Image (cartoon, rainbow, N blue to C red; front, side, top):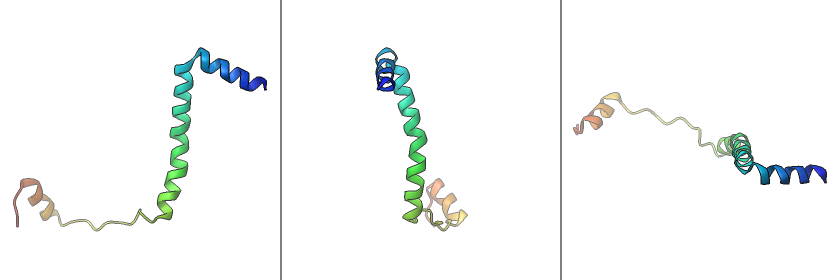
Length: 64
């Protein structure tokens, strides 16, 4: 129980540092969860690349 009391005191005394630690922990945890989900959905399939001349024409605003 002493650990929880110390944690509560830390959050009350240093709310900005505690929030930063929470955000950092969330940021480190998120890729460990999201990447396997995306891999299981097979969203990592390669998309065929367009022809370079089509891309250049699209940038220039010209139709072929």
